Image 1 (cartoon, rainbow over the protein chains, first blue to last red):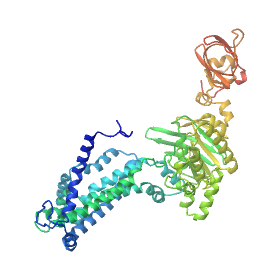
Image 2: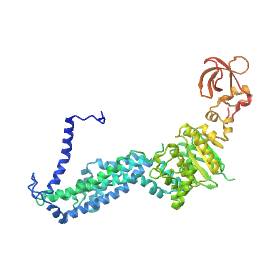
Image 3: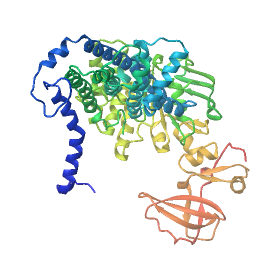
Amino acid sequence: MRSDRGQCAPRGLKIAAACGLLFLHLPILLIFVYAFTTEEKSFVWPPPALTTQWFAVTWNRTDVWDALSLSVRVATISTAIALVLGTLCAAAVSQTRFFGRETISLLVILPIALPGIITGIALRSAFALADIPFSFWTIVLGHATFCVVVVYNNAVARFRRTSGSMIEASMDLGADGFQTFRHVVLPNIATALLAGGMLAFALSFDEVIVTTFTAGQQQTVPIWMLEELIRPRQRPVTNVVAMVVVLVTLLPILFAYYLTRDGDQIAGSGK
Amino acid sequence: MTSAVSFRQVSRHFGSVRAVDAVDLDIVPGEFFAMLGPSGSGKTTCLRLIAGFEQPTAGSISIFGERAEGVPPYRRNVNTVFQDYALFPHLNVLDNVAYGLMVKGVGKAERLKAADEALSLVRLPGYGARRPGQLSGGQRQRVALARALVNQPKVLLLDEPLGALDLKLRENMQEELKSLQKVLGITFVFVTHDQGEALSMADRVAVFNDGRIMQVGTPEDIYQRPRTRFVADFVGSSNVLPPDFVQRYSGQHRWGSLRPESIRVSNATSGDGVTARLVGTNYLGATTRLALDADGLRLHAMVPAGTALPAEGEAVTLTFNRESLHLMDEPA
């Protein structure tokens, strides 16, 4: 039964919903609060006093900047790789019929269903077998495996809603393959790619498990945080970084959601 | 004279399916040519072979004397009006129409002017700023037409362009397409499964079945003088008469066709003529269609509305002029 006719939900249900939402979001707010505490060795509630000094401390710590810059670079390059490969794969799967099409579709999606620890171990043993030393690029490769999926899923959904005869119409009107891609295909899938790319970026930015298996000595932001929690010194710095991470990942996801929200009309359908 | 489009023994096979099978075809420049057939008969594949979306498995195609095999769609001076119109949803109407000129590198002012003129030609002036999503089916159809015509193609291909329109709109568009074709003098190749549409619009009609052309001719030819049982039945549902029956009236042992409107039905059960039993009537407005059973042979007759009819199940006598009995080429 739908409750869109003005009648109110029972009070019990309202309270349950409020509790659920609080349970989900209160801990995140706590993290924000601890970023301002004066107690640096352990998290005590309530905070003895509030201060903004940790922002300055964080700003001056080079290890924070190193981790942040590594994470941004890894996320950017994995997303770029995912955009190219994911789009090509989606185009092939949705625009043509060939033997093994469904299998390829499944194999591309599999890494996101697979537990990260499996992907991580598999990649680590593969790198060891091929004698590839751990580096920036091994992290990128690890992240690209699941970033491709996100882009692929977004792109394939859009391709399915785009009328196939549009591409033929473009060719018919004198556009070669490149012009057709530039003037017809790209404008029609652009928002899907943007949304997929942002999700991929956010996923890569807070990825821990695959990174632990594919990184050498380098620390991405999440790995740095895990290390930091063990050290009983300047703890609120972790919270400051956590706030930044929440904002950096939340904003793109909100934006991506906003972009794909009104995607109900079918592009290019004539009737 | 060179043909606008010429097919020589053209085949297009998809695996074991012979979508088009050894077709010979010559389309005269400037004519309105219809390809008529049931779905799966190969008519749309033929259109796609002309457009360049398909390549022939065997045989040769030329467009105004130039060989077309291996030439991609974007290098052919041929444009298509698609069944679902395939307008670009991210462009407004004017940019849709100007698209072909844009990719050819025509300057902005010039191409928009040409697009404006094309929109006037299809009687949609001032619609340039709208999005395709804001137009009705009939208007989208006109935009698709303008988008193809603005490139001044030598051949315009139309793939069931009226299929999605309602009856009234369809009749208007039929007349308009016909007069547009006369004014522009461009060769139109039109695919349809509607025999009424093919007969009323085309200068010549090719009837397709199972990937082959059954008959090519003027609408009158096709309607009055079908060459095979399939054509007689598909184009206007003629009565197909078996050789034994035909022999009694014409002396020749061949398949015959008799148009439903050529049969006269009378109540009298005596005199010469075919004795039959009325098994059903179908009121069609201006005429009434009668289903008759003549000794196991199923016949249809068309009589003007208002004719006094016997009751269903009663015996009637059918008469017709010998001249209206057409003998077909198909071997008995």
